[in-house]
Length: 527
Image (cartoon, rainbow, N blue to C red):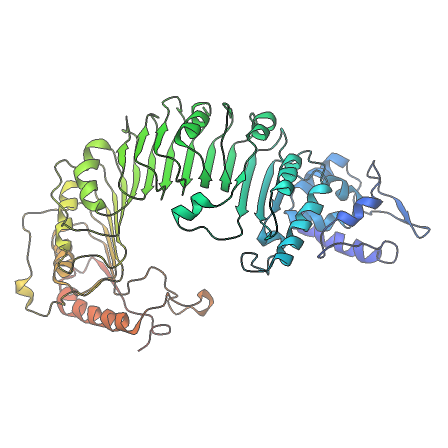
């Protein structure tokens, strides 16, 4: 029987039993009040008002019904527990508990409401967990909103004691503090929940494979020794580099590590014993100075933040790399070809460039996809986009090029004769097939870069020029909402860019190239 048919049958049986059994549930699905009527043996029969009520489902073994119930989403599982005593029993050991704003109060944004709503939200979570035996929990996701009058995290400690069992495989804990902590200084000063490390060590060191902590402190005073941990995600977690290193050194199955706003880490070292380690992402860890990877099989490295010392070790297997810091273009050209020689995909995000892209001393022999994203308005008005040809020269295998230019400060629009545009001769970018420039503007060097691609990319098949400095478009589809807002000045600049494309670019496009020019959305950005 399919799950949808099962739910429909349950609804019919609930209607039939309405005169016999009165079900009281909080918000239409909380099964806490039913626990008083549930017999220890989870019998199908019970009396109410001198009458008998019986669950009329197919005669299947109890373990099969429990398995069916475990496959339902948590809210549906709770609803069916209100109908069936058999399901009420399995609800008490449901393996997947997702107690978040979305599942508990989907119509309320708890980050913006008063303390009474948050207290009610936490009380609901408490009732669910108190009616759960704790047995069999494999996935536990919890969003805890700290009440304004709370001076401790006593409730949160108790809930974790219930849910974190020797069977748990995934733990995702988000603690929302009383006040938002955006700056690094405020994050350091904020009182945080100190996650009980002994709970992890005693209960789930052999079972847990996915651990995500947000807005917590993690200070292990002993080696935790996660034997099955594959993914570790720490977001605004107070942990030092030595503490993290101790944790990593005993997590031999680790494959994936993400660190976001972990400002206490000064030196990050990935041990060589992590043979399965593949992916490292570091985002805006303000105290970080050194990243040293010794794991031999890392293949993806994403970094966002201030420029730090990066040593990727034996990085022959690194194929996907993302850099996001000021002047990252020059850094990438001068450093990466020798340190990651087998790189296939490179993404560069830069908020400031003070010099043009230099010539590459060594080639990216295997680079196939290059994305360069300029964010902010801190670029010199005379930045030379034609200098990106050095990337093309250094990348004989390049197939895809993406350039995104955000809203710029003032620049000089080119209005002269096309014969005055610079040309770099004797180039052949033989494998370049697809090019897209978002935020295209009639700056002379950008026109020169586009013309250079058309003249030297002999395998080019797709060229897209988007005059809007935004990534999101509705394309006139009302169901997708509206485009990202643009000021009238930028809309006018986009129309000037379209005119420049028609004047200097369109006539140079070979017939074999699919040429696409994206104008500002007529529905959202009409003048």
